Image (tube, rainbow, N blue to C red; front, side, top):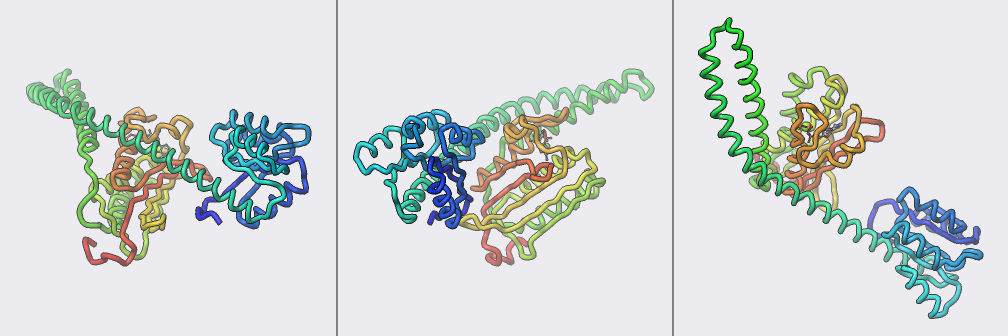
Length: 372
Ligand SMILES: Nc1ncnc2c1ncn2[C@@H]1O[C@H](COP(=O)(O)OP(=O)(O)OP(=O)(O)O)[C@@H](O)[C@H]1O
Ligand SMILES: [Mg+2]
């Protein structure tokens, strides 16, 4: 049957409860979960949670006209894939079904094989659409990142020069002011602010200069454990950090500095989300996604993501922190997209947030001995 492992769910709309239950049971054996509706109102209600992609709809549901219901369902959920079932083998009913927006139609009674073949075509269409939607989203993200990079490069260059002038002048003032001078703290505060601004500019420049990954594959284990140990001793000293690393080297062609910065960013986000005293689990593992990928998961038990953060956290400059730059996650996202991987931040089932970074890697056991 369909080659994709994702669980499938379809809606069967039929006023004949025996037929609907028997079909649903047969499909369950094929790994397809079904919901059942016996009339138009129930069918419309099932669409409410947005989980249904494919509908198997009888063209006659009691007194109701299935083609009319099909049109209503497509209006409510434009991406819906409809397969109409008809007991009448006429050309008219097939044409009516297709006119109503059906992707396919089946003549009742049918064998399970026929149904499965038609459903497979529906699943393939659903997969194609999902792939297209994902590619479009990634394109928008890449464009956004490119624009921000160009902006960041221009701004940070000019800003850095101005900061150098401000700092030089402030340093002269600070040196001339006597320790006891009432103006001394003002000069020092201003110097400190300049330093903070310089850190920000350095981050912006790092963002703007990011290049696609290249160079020899590096063992990701050390790039994860190094920054984690460093933070365990300093900024995350009051947190419980649990680290899971694979036994074998996990080699990927990453820029080591970028990868370490990504780990630091994720752990500092976890620290901020847990108020500095929670716990975070960092897992590095090999996964198979049709080819070899290294997956880094950082999960915390913090406050999780609000609706705003869920939607915008990966956008440059989005931050909910008073002193945040909102560049940490976009930099990770940029690294992932440039390296042919991906990055996502979601709420974990038991609370807290989970960041997942996936990057193409070598097959475990291959290429060992280089850059360990
Ligand atoms: N683990 C997390 N739990 C909850 N919210 C998070 C988590 N990680 C990120 N966020 C949300 O996403 C926003 C963006 O994160 P990002 O790392 O890009 O920037 P930042 O942490 O705000 O600033 P900085 O540039 O200093 O990293 C955060 O301000 C926060 O609202
Ligand atoms: Mg951050």
